[in-house]
Image (cartoon, rainbow, N blue to C red; front, side, top):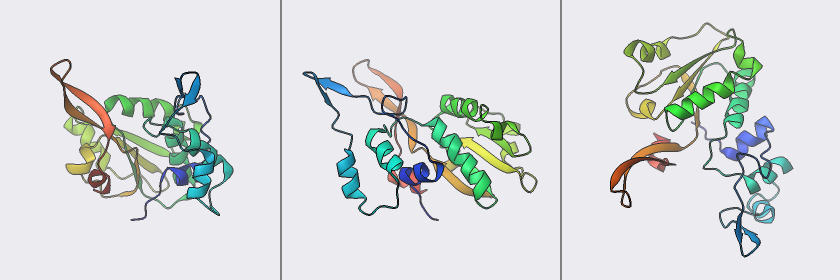
Length: 199
């Protein structure tokens, strides 16, 4: 299986992350100076990608993006790109939870391409669905119609959807952790492990 990364998704979609947007890293102020140690400068990025195949918009976006924020606009653009340009087969999208699945669905239903039911069929997949709702994801759509499954990590371990050809992974999951301050367990969003993303 061939892996593509954020920069590849930005390149093929032409998506641009602008400074100050919902998906950009927030600048922190330290004695009046803007400072964010997690962000790479455009100069650093150009050194990382010398003679790069990536265009200026990709480098500009990488210099401001907050990768820990799920970019629903980019997901919608990437899904449309796959549907229009790549071979047939279902697409599985990993999101961190039910709220994130709902938000992704809301973004997709605003895009004319996804509003046309002859183009795609979209299924949410999470543990609170009924057995009948979960079973529906195994239905194969007619030729020329793309199946998209928006899933939590339930599909990583317990379900195999055999017609999936593409996987879009936000690499964000929710884990039970203990909050020492409040002395109680909490559900915390965090990065998925490398082992989980490979699986």
